[in-house]
Amino acid sequence: MRVLTLTAIVSLLCACGAVSNSTPLDKAESTAQTFEGPVPRAVCGPGSQPELGAQGRVARAEVESGRSKEGYWCNLEPVGREGDGALWQMAWYEDCAYYGLGVAFAQGNTAGQVPGQPAKVPGGGVAVVKVTDPAAPERTATLTTPAMLDPWESLKVNERRGLLAGSAVSIEGSAFDVYDVKKGLATDCSQPVLLGSTDNGMGHEGEWSPDGLTYWSSGFIVASTSALDLTVPQAPHVIATINDGIHGLSLNEEGTRLYAAEHSRSGAGEQDENLEEGVSTNGLEIWDTSAIQTRATGVSTAAAPAKVVGSVYWDDGAVAQMTIPVVIQGKPYVIFIDEGGKGDPQSPGMARIIDVSDETHPVVVSKLKNEINMLDHADQREADGGASGFTYQGHYCGVPQRIEPGVVACSYFWQGIRVFDIRDPHHPKEIAYIIPPLDENDDGRAHTSSQIRFVPERGEIWFTNQNTGFHVARFTNGVWPFPN
Image 1: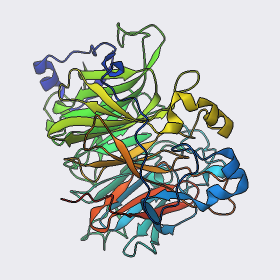
Image 2: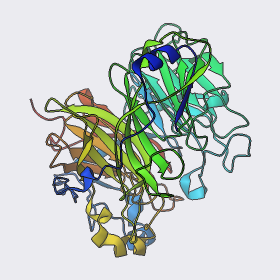
Image 3: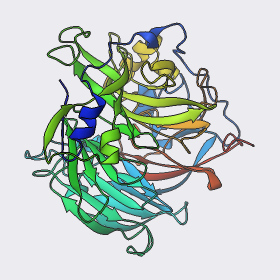
Image 4: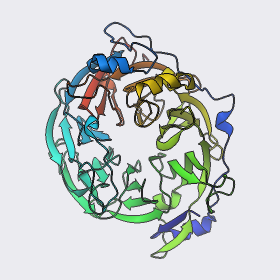
């Protein structure tokens, strides 16, 4: 049974009659209605430096010849760069970017060790980058408070309140730090000011509620997901802990629904009697977080089951990574991405679009797979050394806005950043991509892993590459922003 330990919310949960049973394994996503891919190729216009073979592929021969270090792009062009390495995540506020530092991937960047155990690769803090001139991003500071030494994928900004937060995952013990990045207490976004810290809230991942009053810290190694109250940023404290470790997450605008990337549910034990014994599943769960959002009153400590409103699981992906709720043509969807794959030959995990208009019965409507991710390209993946691991898999996505986003961009490790037109969620298509140029001493493979920022007024995207740091790229040939 998933258990919710909380201060100040038990009474509402009891009044609502919350139950612990989640919905059965949902097979709806495998129906004929699901677009399985590959997505149509982008049509590359003037100035592009396109891929040489299958969509998304960087062949071993291109690495060995040195061609891959020149980069590949289609309807996107490199504009500016800062740094020489990055870890897993990037956040932003106004004209500043924040990203985790570390040893370049090619040199053994593993990151994210269990707290209390020595890190294989020490984190290097969080870089603060001013992007006033996109062609010449400038490092203005490096944050080295405990949680910022290696915030893994937890580094997130709440734009409404101008707060940057992250959890530590590879130092002794656990830590959570929150910074002011808005003008006022901070000079501006390029000089963050530490507001508060706590030794609770350790998480591999994390996300803010839209109102900026709650930060959710999700444990990938430690099987728990905690809600921290940030009403007063100088005094962050845990108000609820759900005894279920998930990966990434997001919340609806009201903060009453949490879209969980569930990566490790199993048929063993009490979790779900409908799952086969010992079989791990991967998919989307929708949690009711109303009681936590409203700070319902109750006794000081208590335990009550958490309610899963709806769920959908699949067997062609693993290590569920993250979620983004969006509205397309007036209808609610969740963009979801898998970090890993399953099967023999392995089917690499990719992004998918899930219809949540009936939140009790989510349905996958399309998968954002390129040619190299299809089963019939398994031999090519194996020849390239990309049959598994952080190779051709997906990792993180970003949208310009949640209401009618039009496009989504996803970091696909070796495939770089892929941009898809999702105005018709049942028939997505690729419109642009960039696999950034590499330095001479890099291993010839891009390792893009961060979330992606869109800058509509300049037609740009921001992202990080684990070999080469922070990047700015600009759309070309009129592919985005879309004309009104």
